[in-house]
Each structure stands twice: as structure tokens, then as C-alpha cells.
Length: 391
Image 1 (tube, rainbow, N blue to C red):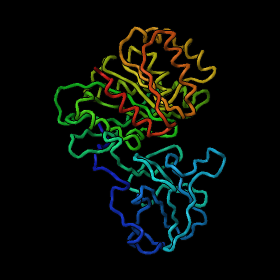
Image 2 (image 1 turned 90 degrees about the vertical axis):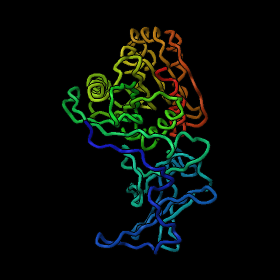
Image 3 (image 1 turned 120 degrees about the vertical axis):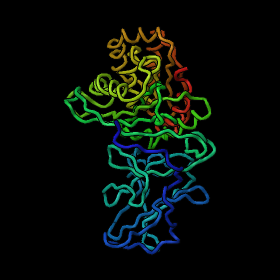
Image 4 (image 1 turned 60 degrees about the vertical axis):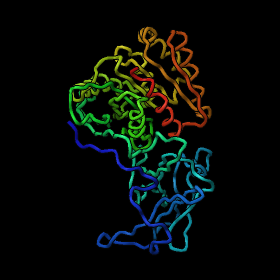
């Protein structure tokens, strides 16, 4: 049934392996495959809360670190070159330190070396993305205690499943699946299911690698705030073809309803009923949820839409195309939850969605937070949404 399983691992605070700080490593030098590797920390939290990045590259001419959500690292959205410039230090490492402390959270980064983007060669935790693999570091803090690994609570497992999609021409597809503590011991108990979709620049590993969804679930289940559930994290992209794009992807909808959901129900101990099935997503995943979840109360009893709405002509087109489904949703009692940051560039697109819901009489809960289009918000939205499910 599964290709591999990943047990919940110990908390990662910057690195899963204790790499030596810069003061304890030899000077930067090129080493061949036949030599022992040069160990050093590619990212390190300083005592004052700032974060230092470093890279050993003898032949590089220009090195930057790209980290979209790390304060003080230029994003490039203002037209200036993205990334924080690194300079050579007295040990031959390219290094730089953020100008301000970095708040607790999970952050992705990559190095841009003479125009080529690479993951940290000293990294121990990675995520896939459209732009190539990203390295990850984590800073824990008391502000968000449920978003990090706790050794004292029972832990679920995350599996990678692969399936053939007849709807997409027989290609191999995959999804990450969280099963709650105790599931692997077997038994007859069946569980409700949440389908949780990532955003445009990410992959099906994002909700685990960047969102810490498995840790959030473990911690909330342990306190009794959340019912034990299976969480399916699909791959939100499909092969490119004319007329199909990321935010309104009918191919994803076909694969979800005709292939993935039947596969999950056949291979996992699910409660295969609308009232015990939910769908949620962030950004592109939220758009998928609006398109293929909200108008389908016959499949999904609960809905969560994070950081996305409808723009321009999408508004009238959406209502007319989904009229029957929206009328059916208005008759259901399952929670519908929308959340967005006030500084998010998609913020204006959420009001039209709320108006459509009001016009159809769809009861929904709406939350605004500070901040923008970031994982800091999406982890918080997930933590707020999960306790609403399957009650």
C-alpha cells in the first residue's frame, strides 16, 4: 500500500545534525569525493536571534541567499535583485547575517551562486518546489507551541502513496498521507479524512515540510481539541496543456474526484461519507478548494480556504458555473472557513467570495490576520481550522 513511511522525528531547530559552528571548522577548501566532507553550519541562529548563512565555494564570484519569508532578506518584488548578498570572511566562507532577529517559524532558503540556485549542501531538511529543492531551518518559540514536535505526545505517521491516474492518461501520481497515532497498530476503527492542498510554488510535501501539519495534528489530537483523522495531501499540479492552468485546473479536479478519493477510500480505513470528509488549501490549493470542494457538498462536508479568492471575470463565471452546487452547499451544516492576511496581495479577492456565499445563504466563518502570503499565516490557519472539523 505504501512506498515508504516517515515516522515523526525529533524536533529540528535549524538542523537535524549538530554541525560545528564557524569558529570550530577548518578554513573553506575544495574536497573530492574520496576525502571526508567538510562539515560546517550553513545556517545558524545567533544568541541575539539573528540568523547567519554561510557557504563554502572557492570558485564563486557572487553568492546570495534567497529566503522569501526571512525578515531582512530582499524578496526581489520591488524590482531590486532578490536575496541577501554574502561576502567572503576570514576563513574563506561566503557569509552574511540578517539585520534583525528572525521570529519563530519554519523557513525555506537556497543559495544563488553566480546565477545558479542551489540548496544548502550542508542542509539536512529539504522541500520540493517549482524552482528546485529548498533547504529548511526551524526556529522554535513559545508563541506557537502546537506547531512544533513535542516528544511527550503520541505521533502519527506520514506516508508517500503513488497511484495511476486514468483521468490523466495513466500517469503516476502521488500524495502524502498522515495517519493519526495508533492507526498503524491496525484494528477496525475508521477515520474522517481531510484533503489538504498546497500552493502554486510548492509540492505535495509542503504541508509537512513547511507547514509542520503532522506536528500540529499530533499536538492537537493529544489535547483532545481535534478528532483523530487521516489527512491526504495531494500533488496540486498536473501536466501542462492548453487551457488548463494552476488556479483553475479541471485536470486536478478530475484526478481528485475520480482517482485519488477512490484510491484513499480503498486503501485506508476511512469513513467514506461527505460529513466525514473535508477539503482545504492555501493559495492555489484554496482555489482548488473553491472550484472542486465548495460546490461539492455531496463529497465534502467541510471546507477551508486560506489566502485566496476570486478576481475579475472569475466572480460571475464562478457563480454561474457552480449555481446548483452552491445552492446545495447552503443546505449543509458543515463548517466553511475563510482566512486571509490583511497585507496579503490576494486580500481584495476574498470579499467577492464572501458576497457570493452571502447571496447563496452559505454560512461561513471568516478570519483576518496580520501579515501576508506566508507560511506563518497558513500554519496558524490550519491550527484554527482543524478543531472545527467532524464535530
